[in-house]
Image (cartoon, rainbow, N blue to C red):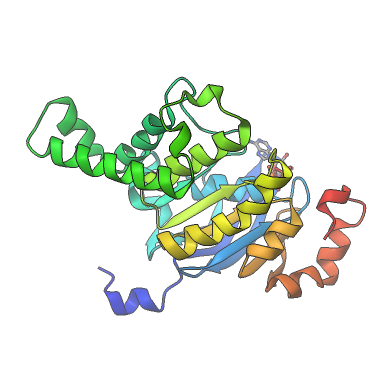
Length: 267
Ligand SMILES: Nc1ncnc2c1ncn2[C@@H]1O[C@H](COP(=O)(O)OP(=O)(O)OP(=O)(O)O)[C@@H](O)[C@H]1O
């Protein structure tokens, strides 16, 4: 068992020499870095650098060919694949993972119940404690609806809402499971200028007010450099730089990796 003193000096996420191959393609090649509790860590790299592959390893959608990942001191490989929300890792997806025919509130409630598998069974069979668990879930869903400014659309069907609002609903769903670590997969993609302006403050609020550590994959350099405490850069599956946003932005290999990339990806 890990005691509190051990945990205090321990990274929340410890990635050690992770490699992933798909046939002849090396998607990740011995990648190592830590994410400390309370940190916002940005993960950058040109298209095909391996960012999504790493996220998929962290969600246990992919297995590592070698290396290890520890979350909160425990090897991820021993954790059940279908219970990632329950163990404290939440994520959003590039293509939104939502129940589109359900309301905003119902989506947030699904997130609450994904944490308590037993709560779901208790509810289904009307076991003792079901009413208390349901009341707690309703309260948490409401707190997140307020936190994310979704009050005016809480009873609306998700499919009827603008894309930027749907992205906030996905955040509510992911945060409802009370993750310790939130993986954000390109949260800026598809947002309008106004939504983009408020996204940086929202990510900081998630860290500061909800005490959630954040790992952020993002192509929008203004956002990732503005919000991250530290940035890790990948290229062709290898880590090429790690440090403060200023250090990574000035790193010669990072500059080289982005030369010739799309303008929005230019550091
Ligand atoms: N399931 C898969 N099967 C085969 N190859 C894959 C698979 N997933 C990723 N790859 C390959 O692994 C490499 C890394 O891809 P990955 O999607 O992780 O990059 P990325 O940094 O997320 O890129 P992008 O910014 O475009 O999303 C690429 O060469 C990609 O084609």
